[in-house]
Length: 46
Image (cartoon, rainbow, N blue to C red):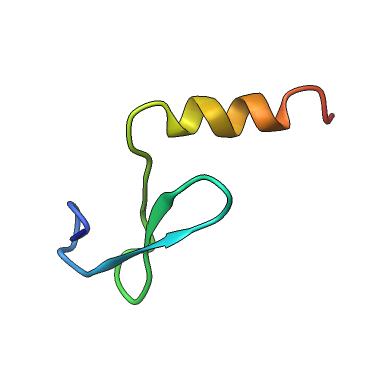
């Protein structure tokens, strides 16, 4: 996947398949419901 901000190639990372722009702007991209899954995995860990 290409970064929508700087057009660099994005790579998948983490337990949830999150795309990250390495070597470009450093942005991240969450597909549908991925951010919600990350929040659910981290809820109650304050």
